[in-house]
Structures are given as C-alpha cells and as structure tokens.
Length: 426
Image (cartoon, rainbow, N blue to C red; front, side, top):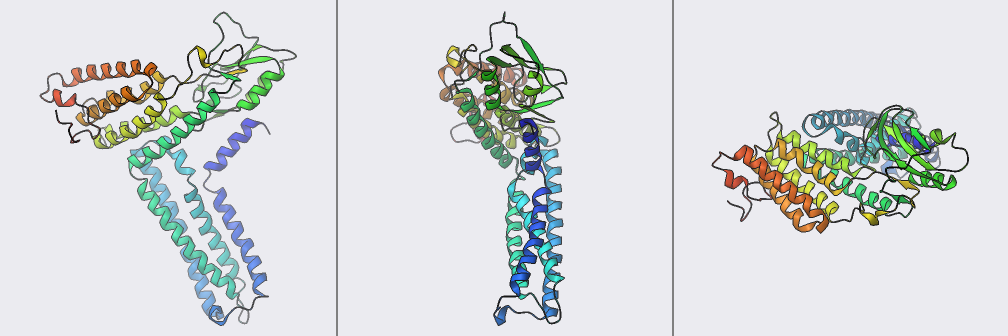
C-alpha cells in the first residue's frame, strides 16, 4: 500500500466515530465469554453472589442504562455539530471528531452493553455468573464517570474562545513541526533560477487539497535518481486533476514511473488539515472571529478574545527565523524544495479580514491595535516592517469608518480587553 493511501486511511480511522466503539463492543463480548469461563472456577464471596432474578434485574437495568447513555452521547454530539457549524467554524469539526474522550466514552458504553448482554444470556436458575454481574456494575459506574467527563468537555467547548485556544495549540505544534522540516539540510525553500527548465513535470492524478507530503520518501527518491524535486504547490493548496504538482530537475536513469511514484508520496483530500499546515489553524481562528462579528451573532467581545489567542500564535511565528533569506538553503543542494509561508503571509491571514469585518466594532479595533503593537515589540527586527504596514492599514480603516465619529480618539487606543482595560482609556 502506498504512503498516500496509508495516510488517508489513517486519517479516516482517526476521524471515524464508529471504529473505536465497534472495537469496544467486540471486546465486551470477548470479556463476557472469558469472565464466564473464569467464573466457573472462582469461589465468589457470599456478598458478591446473586440470585437469578436479582442478576437478571441488575443486568437488564445496566443494559437499558448503557443504551440510554449511548443515545445521549450521540444526541450531544449532534448538537455540537449544529452549534459548531453555525457559531464557530465548520473546519473545527475535524478536531472534534478526533476527540479521544468522545470515542472512549462510546467504546466503554458499547462494551458495557455487549458485556452485560453476554452475562444476561448465561443466567440459569441454578447457575448465576456472579463475578460477571459485579463486573458489569463496575463497568456502568465507570461509564457514568466517563460520560460526565465527556459532558463537561462538551460544555467547555461550547465556548468559542475555548475552541480558539484548542486550535491555537494545534497550530503552534504544527508550526514547530514545520520548522523542523525546513531546518533539514536536504530540504530547501528557495526555488531554482527562473531560466531553469524541469526535466519532467509531475501532475496530480486526482483532485484535492494537499494534506501532507512524505518528505523522507521524496528525499530518498530524489537521492536515488540524482534529481531535485520542486513543489509547485504548498501544503493546503487545492490541486485539480492534471494540475502541476512537482517539477523534477535533473535526474539519472529512467523517469518513466516518476509521476506514479511521486503521486503516492503526496496525500490529497477533500479539505485542509492542521497537521502539516499551521496556516490552517490561523484560518480557523479567523473564521471564529468573523462568525462572532457577523450580524446574526454580533458578539465583538468573542472576537476580541479570539484575537488574544491569534496574537499569541503570531507572536511565536514572528519571533522565529522562518528561513526565507539567502541562508535558507540553496536549491542546488536541497533534494526537495517546498513552498512555505512567509511572515507576511501569516500576518496578512491573521489581520486583514478581522480588520475589515470588525471595522465598525470599537472593541475589535482597540484589540487589533494592542495585538499589533505588541507584535511590533516582540517579533524579529526583519518582521517589524510588515507589522508597521498592518498598523498603517489599521489607521486607514479607522479613518474611513470613524473619521466623523466622536469616538475616533477612543477607537485609536490599544486595549487588550477591547474596552475597559486598565489604563487604556482614551
């Protein structure tokens, strides 16, 4: 199986809501059989022994409770989907589906259900699996505790700011991983000279957004064929069928199978992922802020709070040498050349739309200025010109929307809290 197919299958499994619960149900049946066999050889203390009628009643109640809790978990999950798609950002759902607590709760409940059914069918008038009945009781208590933890997490994640914080953490981790990739000696970010012509162009054999690339495999292929691979698209870009994907420079031996082999090292999917695309995390946070600023929601305080998490992510990126200068790697030496985001790309993505759609909100304007002024102090000197440019654009936006307003002076003030921050009065 090719790397891209394994990646897509792994992503489907991680995003699936039925595989782990199904495994839990199967384990419940297996555990029921094993415990029943063990029960035949155990000397269960008297206070753990049950009559057949009591055991049947207890197990029936546990089966009903497990089934009801499964239905409630599914209902809560469905409500979360409706809430997220209508209030936050539909792109957050990819993280929600992967929540291990959600899958663990469903798996334990399904396992408790099948285990209890397995015990229930083995009850005879003179033969009661007492150890199994007690174990079922322990399982339903554990399921209830896990359900309460799951419910608490759901309530916590109904807050847009909590979602933004979760996305920000995922984005920062993806950025750190991306920095490790760019720092490799066999990976470059500087493309060949404009006059260079590729010996072969690899085109996508199917449409989709680039979700990930198998960098080790690409480097190994380039070394084996004495070639240099230059990506025409960045991770996160949508590539149509037949679109230019990779340009091959140089190369020895036969390159007849290059297109097929290299396509198997690039995973395409329906949508972007954060895994190798930290800019997508910023995209999601911006979407949450924009949703809060929409007339249907009209929650500028939420957008202001999201700006705080967005600013922390931008501060980390701006404080890092992104390696787009001459020292970033010579395309003639690197086996693989990939397209990466510049600091200007990240900053434009994080600031432009919020400034545009939040121009009428004095909270948003003040919080944006506070974020940008803080970035101006914290980022590397080479990155400060872009921040100054964003501040100039912010001033122009304020002049356009607030020029005739009595509150223009207040809209120009930097305030991390939007309005009401200590010492931030105009």
